[in-house]
Image (cartoon, rainbow, N blue to C red):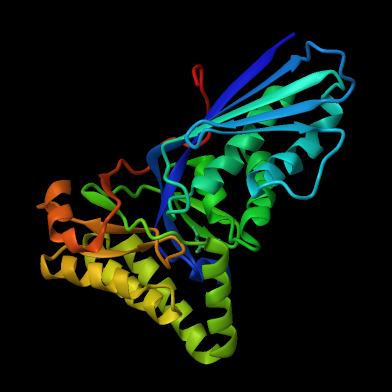
Length: 323
Ligand code: MEV
């Protein structure tokens, strides 16, 4: 019998405290109205095969993989390694004559600091839970999706999978989350189109903090103070974006291109910062006076990939009826 489940979960914006959160400092994060959708189907194979099969389709990139689950290799792309890790946890439920089909499509740009990999991890674990345990137990799903995130990023703080699982806005510190009523209107996401690797940027900060211990600690503490002010004085958020950006620059995760964009925007009183790992990816900018096209005009020499105004504080992982 064919069984199908569909889930979705949101991307995220770190409003303040990225990187410092890896060192146990508080960070402020919100979910956004861009989601990743995943469908998992288990059906009986039509041929006489006696080993289970996995078919994965990434619709946005038109990539497909067909894997014999009784003969798993070591050389799969990282997303497939994540899927196989979760499959291993559930394989006792899967019969030898089954074919598992996973389909993915996403509104979240990949590798841009908007939590696409966490949404993937959370949906993946969510699909398996829903198919085999008939529930979406968020605590369990968050815990297992953190392990998938570790395959992708090394030693992440867990903030990305937590916000994608629970949604809304959170203050996050050492795996403890606190929901807060935090919403920003007029928040633009500026995608620089510069590819970035979270793993590499986290490693870069680790090198900096380890080789400049006193200065590193001071910067991390200042980031946390900045985050606390964002929570308490949201009316000063623009200025606090600037402060947090300066501290991120000290940690070495800004680039000349990003500094240049931020400087151009600041001249028009549009206050912006990196969101996520930095080194490229996306910036967030507060503006009530400028449209998307006007910001693109201001940055016409900077090869901006896209600008979007997004909804913040949306629902986390959920079951969907259609893919
Ligand atoms: C990535 O979205 C956020 C970082 O702080 C890494 C992490 O928290 O794992 C850069």
